[in-house]
Structure formats: C-alpha cells, structure tokens
Length: 114
Length: 114
Image (cartoon, rainbow over all chains, first blue to last red; front, side, top):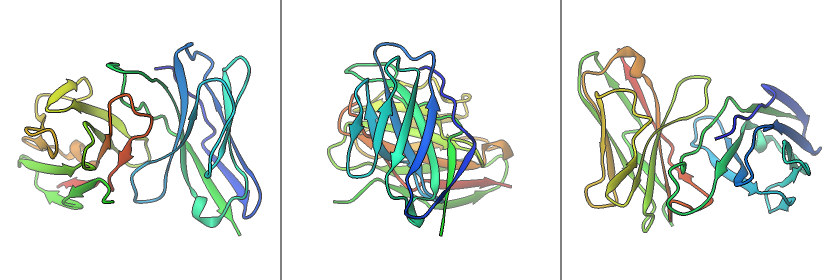
C-alpha cells in the first residue's frame, strides 16, 4: 500500500471545524483513502473512505484532491469526545485481495480544547 | 448487537512463558484480523483469516507466534516463549467479508511480559 504522511499533532477549539490533512502522493489508481480514529484505550474506529469523489457521512467529510495525492478529513463541529489519534490509510478494496489488511502510520493526534 | 470482544483485557506473564489471546468476532463476520500496537505507534498487521484459513500471515514476526480459527468464528493468537519485546496491545478486528469497507475492532488485550 502507498505510504501516507500526516502531521504528528493538531489542536482544535471545541465547536470549530477540525481539518486533518494527509499526503499520499504515491497512491495507485485502485487504492482508496480510508480514515480511522483511535480514542485512548480503545480499538480503532472506522470514519469514512473514498476513491476520488468527496464523501460525507454523519461523522465527517472527506475531501480528496483532483490528482488524489492528498486528502483532508473534516470534522465540522469538533467536540471534546473527538480527541483521538486519526489515521489516514490507503488500501486497495476488492474481493480476494491479498492486501486486505490496514497499514497504519503514526497518525495525527488531535486534541480538542474547550 | 455485540461488538468484537477480546479476552483477557490484560495479561501479565513472565519471560519464556506461553500465552493465548482470544478474539470473538461479530457474529457472521467471515474475515478476522490480528494487529499488534506498541506504545505510541499505530497498529501493525499480524495475520488475516478468511473463514477458517489464514489468508495472509505475512505480519507474524517469527515462528513463536501462531494463530488459529478452527471453526471460522473465535480465533486464538498463541505466543510461545514470550519475550519482553512482545509487550504490546494485541487488537483483533472482523469484517463481514474480506473486501468489506469497515473493519470492526475489539478493545484489545494488553500483554505485559516481565
């Protein structure tokens, strides 16, 4: 899987939007961008994924650049409970795929402050 | 419904001992993954099962590590002759099919080797 680069840490004020960037300049055409987060002492939790179109769900929005070399996860109104490590992962999706595992990097530690 | 469960939540053992870590996936999930997370790092893939068979065990660090899933549901990760470097949180995840977009993680087992 392509390697991703994320800032080590970020702060965000409660109630404001949190914008978490990710670089994946070597992403292949059949690789999706996934975001997971890990709250302290818990297992990772899926947030969202996309291929090339922007995606939105009840948790977040994912903005992928046209060249697909970078993306941004947006938490529109961050709360204290959003404090976690956020992982950007690129992964091929499909059946009988030998690369079904998730390859985690170091992630971004987001601290939401009151 | 019930999520992925892992037992024990904590395991302390002495160097050289044998340990077994158990994972109960979400009912009906055919894919099961084991990851290991060292302090301050992202999870690292160990092994992936599709049904009863190990589809990819390329992440197992050496032959002291072994995992089974005899009936295609519960999985056990077995570590022989434990070493202090094996200390980590061992995470299990499951998904409905191996191509499924979301992996559901358990809370992990914290293994400490003294």
